[in-house]
Amino acid sequence: MSLLVVGSVALDTLQTPFGRADDVLGGSAVFFAAAASFFHGVHVVGVVGDDYPTDQLGFLAARGVDLSGVEQVPGESFRWSGVYSFDMNSRETLDTRLGVFADFSPRIPEACRDAEWVFLGNIDPLLQLDVLDQIERPRFVACDTMNYWIESKRDDLLRLLGKVDLLMVNDSEARELSGDFNLARAAKWIQARGPKYLVIKKGEHGAILFTPEHVFFAPGYPLEEVFDPTGAGDAFAGGFMGHLAQAGRMEDGDLRRAVMFGSVLGSFACERFSVDRLKDLTAEEIEERVRQFREMTVFELEVAETARV
Amino acid sequence: MSLLVVGSVALDTLQTPFGRADDVLGGSAVFFAAAASFFHGVHVVGVVGDDYPTDQLGFLAARGVDLSGVEQVPGESFRWSGVYSFDMNSRETLDTRLGVFADFSPRIPEACRDAEWVFLGNIDPLLQLDVLDQIERPRFVACDTMNYWIESKRDDLLRLLGKVDLLMVNDSEARELSGDFNLARAAKWIQARGPKYLVIKKGEHGAILFTPEHVFFAPGYPLEEVFDPTGAGDAFAGGFMGHLAQAGRMEDGDLRRAVMFGSVLGSFACERFSVDRLKDLTAEEIEERVRQFREMTVFELEVAETARV
Image (cartoon, rainbow over all chains, first blue to last red; front, top):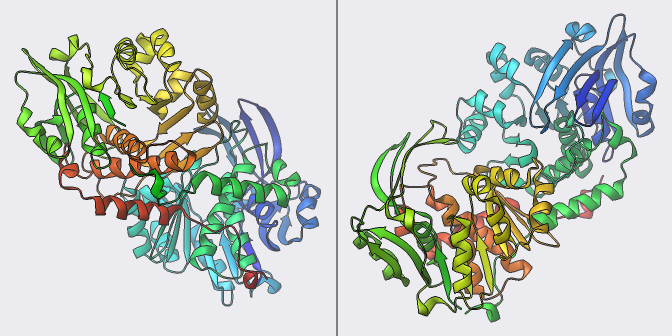
């Protein structure tokens, strides 16, 4: 029942209205693993340069994350730096230095080739396809992508979509990929290209799960302080896939809960810089917030008869 | 248990990607009454010019809407015209002619002064205050407003907020009123100024109800064709207040259901021009869509034990 993530292991430098952080832990695989490890063991495949503070990943190892698939090679680690707007709703990338990530060609360790639950972080669709070729018989494959690949590697991405169970993107990516501004129609378009399931993340507006039979909505958690939204989408993916791997199945109820756990982990990720909040987070806090989500969405269909006029 | 709405009765001319409609029924009170009448009788107070096609309001009268408070005076009716963008997410006002609405000074008919449920549509806060002075002892007062009043009549609006139970605005209005881009904080700010309850409408992203104890989220209905969103917010208000008046109480469960009925009526309003969809809508269709909303948001907290790995 192992869970595998392939993605970036990076160093972020960012400025928000709340302050600045330099060369802190970042990358899709790091956020994913930090979130998923609350639910299940995780194998991480990625690459870092010889400048990477690998000791800082110790908290992941302590939680049962297998980092042996993170190759360390000579050169500089992937670095991203950006600045968030005052209202946190937009960000500007100041610098992207791919470093050793530019030549990343994921090699799945022998021990992970029987992974059942696979998350392909946002990398070149050709590499995502290559990873799939290395996995023997995955039970559930989810992938992320971004506008850059939608524009530059559209054909490869469409080929990938034919081979995954779930695509997880944000609303602007779903619109760009499908060429349709209407999300309900965009979802149909995407599902017709392969993925049985689709999750569209809408930031503060929550997330939507599309299955062949249902549409399921999770609201955004009403945080009073969005300290740093970097990595929230990857933490969402980690909570989502971690829950499925833990449940060991993907029935409708499991997928709905997975969306809620994704939303919970994504919301916690925003509360501090980098993965800091995910470091001291507890299982009790996660469960409490899932209960809050339920409280925020539950309603009864029937009015008590006495209330009728 | 009577329900009163005070607002505009207008004629709209609009262009959407789906076509054009000229001088069709519009105005907050008309959309409100068309939606609320599925749940409860409604008294409408408004004003029209001698050019208004009052016969077209016959479908409301047939549903038990009392239009005797709609004064007809010499002059032109309120006319609005606008054009929607290709993606329906923005609209441009081409022309606003207030006509007789410019001198609107609502006079609440004797028979409506004992109204228990009152909705103050988007008009000058001074007029909204004046209406409240004419109501003997309302049980529940909700009001709408808009950026124009937030900017030009801020003090009067704040005075009004001290006298209403619920404010219903869209997200940009909540942000502008509170001066806070964070909706969770904006809600606290607004609730501290008087309204015990607050509904923030977010268009395709749904709506949020804030009570003193809870936050409740309703998703946007995933319409594949948003034909004409004009009046959706007023139809929401009508569904919301109509349900409360019908229930005859405003406990937490009633308010949550009211938000769902509001969302349902708002979504139907978008399916055709003007109030056209609300004309042939049936109680069964409303109930079916509320069930769909429940299906789209419900999830169980617990995983069956057998599912644990």
